[in-house]
Length: 453
Ligand code: ADP
Ligand code: MG
Image (cartoon, rainbow, N blue to C red):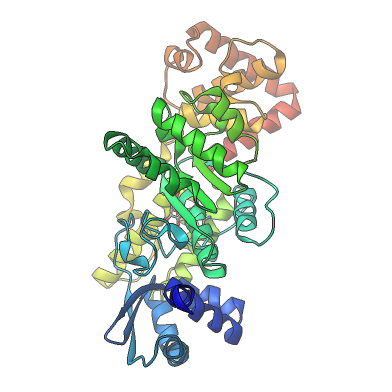
């Protein structure tokens, strides 16, 4: 007994309750219901849990609460009651020290003390489509037992496409499956601030220990540490040390390793050693799927199919905005007590729809086109004139002219400082070529569709 026995009790009663639940009701029931809950703590023999939606809470109250109470009682002695609160936090949760009060405050399962882990961001709530399937499966693989064949996992994609969601999902899953694995989730920004603070207080040793003693380190949004030399250096050392110890590292950024500017070459090349998985902009099917899932979770609110289709067609920017639009419509209809119709939707979302209509940016066109032709962005914008690079560059210029309101000189500037006559030439060239060249025509149709969503 002694220290070991005590530790076993304090590690994570919730993980064990979940495990017993799984044994009795199966994987599916766990992931759909009880796995969606967050364990807050226990006071005066009352267990407090938080549910992401009212629907999930009501379902658990009706079907599983009594059994959960038994499980807790056998873990912790006599439990009087279980209270399931609704999650009332806004979209961007604050650090949630309350996630697991018993965890080691430095390095805890799922890194609860490091950063807020959003209970809604699980694998179960992640809708998989063509644009994100590689990232999704790679993330799942990290949580499975056995050697992971890639390290690090580098996820990149534009804002609001699910990178953070996948990282939290990894943390939750690991916490559920194997609470003894030490997981740290941290934003690169926070990593940087901590490091700077450690430097100031001459306490870099503790800092290093903290990050080098984990099994799984996840650093979100590493583009934030570009151009911050000392942080980069420390990040790189930590990262090397972890990989040499066969610890898994997961990293996200809003662009690919090779497009990260201001980060040293050796860091970039090592980042690229593992698996680089990009999350593409959503397509219509994925947006439909996401909205349908959300509609099903809204108990008691009827969202007609035509409204869902309308939203999926018109809100193409990213998933965060799509969810925001959906929530706004539901909130409005609920408050005003009107049924949700196409008309109400149009009305409520006027501004958003207008913004999405003129949304495509040169930046997106460049990224999407480079991606499409398997080029690096830097290559496409370079001086190189080889045809396999020059043609995609011309296509991107052409699309920039066609799909944005930008002027020729401005487009030239955004393409590595080229002259407006170069852009004009490109536009004309592609216009001519696409008439006879069916594969080029096909490329342009597809790219347009990708960009319009
Ligand atoms: P990122 O970190 O890439 O900027 P987030 O992970 O914060 O994006 O995602 C933004 C919002 O969109 C979150 O609420 C997230 O749950 C949701 N989201 C993104 N992709 C999906 C998806 N495939 N299925 C369900 N929800 C998603
Ligand atoms: Mg994010």
